[in-house]
Amino acid sequence: MKMSEQQHYIAAIEAGGTKFNCAIIDSHRNIISEKRIDTTRPNETLKLVTQFFSEQKANGYTFKKLGLACFGPLDLNKSSSKYGFITATPKPHWSNTPIVSILEEELNCEVFLDTDVNAAALAEYKWGNAINASVAIYITIGTGVGGGVIINGQTLKGLIHPEIGHMLIDAPEGITGVCPFHENCVEGLAAGRSMGKIWGKPAETLPDDHPAWDIQAQVLGKFCHNLLVSFSPEKIILGGGVMNKPGLLNNVLNYTQESLAGYLTLPESITLKDIILLPGLDQHAGLFGAFALTQD
Image (cartoon, rainbow, N blue to C red):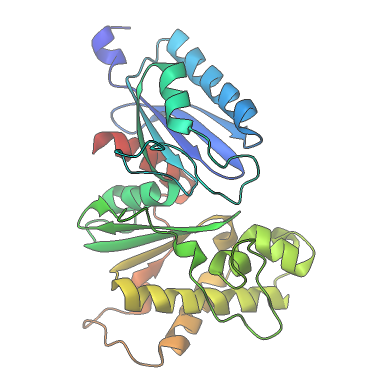
């Protein structure tokens, strides 16, 4: 393998609260090698991550850049002494983890960091269901709930970065959220882990006619209402494992329409079905987002 070919490879990590998806990706966005590693304690997880990438280097897949689409909260301020740290996170054991410096030192490469949802939003903007949208939002509803925002092709960071999953929502009657930081934020009500705590069994085991799914649609409908009136997005992409539930997206659309109560006048020929969508990149939005970070 020639060195000129080797330099085209990119290392990519989608670092989530449940698992780290690690991959080597070529310049044409083909996934050459991939491995999933459970998110346990930082030392355990990052040791396995660096072992995987070191093995890839030994196999000839050398890289100089690593895109890291990471769960948060994160310190993204490059002038901060804590840049590249996972800060105060609900994920046990991971608060104050200097993840960027660990990876850079162990793998001798430059790490490009953003939140997992900002990166996924960027991937959907470039190659998925939000192509060329001037304002696009990617929401993941899985272990937790997070949101990334793209404005004119750039991920939104601002003071820290969006923490949309902790937007407060009026909970449906009889339901109380379980977020350890806020009582009735979206994550505490709608994340898969939260649904499991609220209903006493894993969300994926709840039958189709369980009231949890109607309540889930109500919460997400109010959530989309707030996103629409706050950001005026052209696209809201709803991803994450919970959104794989058949019929959930249609119910979210119906509850969003009901919540808006006719207030928004959309452009001619545009309906909520054109705005609120599932991901176009399916399960690859996160990894392709990590790849995209190294390109920008």
